[in-house]
Image (cartoon, rainbow, N blue to C red):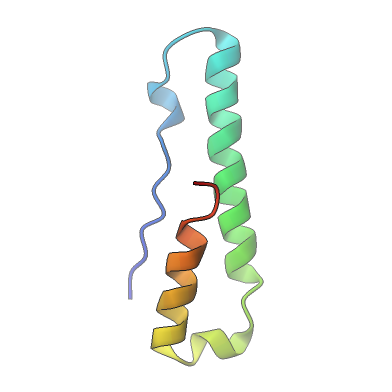
Length: 64
């Protein structure tokens, strides 16, 4: 099973240092929230492929 949790590439942001820093902070926050949601899943979520896929898709929407 695969899940793609894409985020905007903060390295592609042009502008001031503050704008670049903000882009990196945003990407970090999104990834951190998604990772925290993944590790918070109950063990039972990993027993049912359908449930797991639904959870992974839901997690991939966090921060959007």
